[in-house]
Length: 127
Image 1 (cartoon, rainbow, N blue to C red):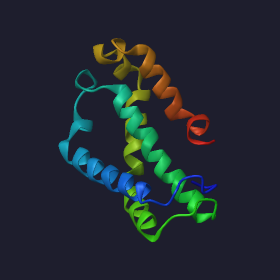
Image 2 (cartoon, rainbow, N blue to C red):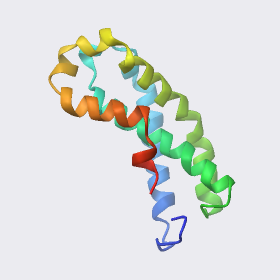
Image 3 (cartoon, rainbow, N blue to C red):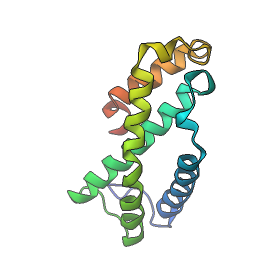
């Protein structure tokens, strides 16, 4: 997008709109208040990585390295409110006691990869 490789067909705005709807719903469900035994780390960590991408996009747009429509900028600005959610998720799964849950052990490999990506997202979020 920064290199204008994508056509301006409204795809980004549609994706951001759907992301916002999903995040608003997820925040209301209370899933993040449940114990580790009821949670799937790889899904949550994927969400944490995604909200970090929102922050990255906002920074890139602010430095004029990413050209966004007014609608995309407005959506990103609202989505920024969810960036702390990613920090909360990362913090939860960094605690060793949470990684003793059966839900962690059952998916240990992907959970470890997702946690590592969450801790050092540059290799994933940057081209």
